Image 1 (tube, rainbow, N blue to C red):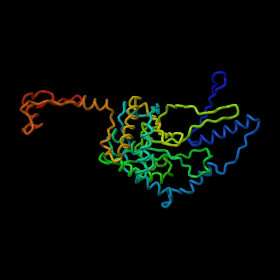
Image 2: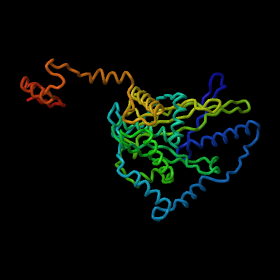
Image 3: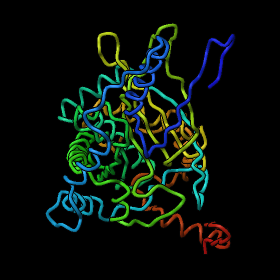
Image 4: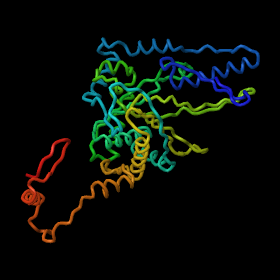
Length: 389
């Protein structure tokens, strides 16, 4: 707790272990604290209303409903079987272009990069979602999967996402750890249209959400992927939609609002947190996105480019949802000019005798070079050199 100028401003920090509370729990926790403040400020004791359900009741209910893995027909056994099939053969690691080699043991140090998506693209994403009978989350997930595929050069991409786990209104006022983590897998080719990717993602996401009761920690034990202290198991990129509203409170003699806090912690290689914004009429006003990244792997400039490329993918699919994903341009104009007009500007004008219809080929040009410069170096790789001869 700290005081501001004149002792009129204070910061109160609550430290709660994640085993005891999730993000949604901050709402009822804040209400309880503020209710206690109002009561004490008036010289009264807080009048707590007993909850209809306790967290222990939820835990017992979950155990009773899921059953045991030793029972073949139990819900838990059925869900475990689903995940064994859905994640069979999943690559252990997604390798994005990084600035540094992955350490043997991750430091979990992180930093944030914030970027935004304008209202027009936000509105267009909603249109795409409705046209393809999908949710906005599914469309954004598809776009992120496309970007990760393009950056990594692989067509099998896993992304993690949190699920609230509070299925009943009676749990809304309960403080506890209800959140689970799901692994959302996408497999598609560069020749697929974005619309086809969304359709496939929709089916995979619905399947995952329909089998969301197996605790992630147990799933890791069951699937037993190759473990490493340098990466998160099963997935290294997290996507979360943040829909917890920022609120301010007016109490007797006191105004209260949340303070931004950066813990500088990265649990994953990259976490993409997306928040929908709305105007006064409830219409789409854009998306706010935060990239929380592992500084073990990435520089800030790399993550800035990541955000810019993600926005380009979103803009491309809004303009044409049938676009072939391999044709989506992820490079900016400057990057593209460097690649096309810089590094790969290798055009050479041949002798005037060589033209369309001649019998000159790349192979014949090479043979000619062997005859002229047999000892000249043709290929260099590491410390190895090969001559034309």
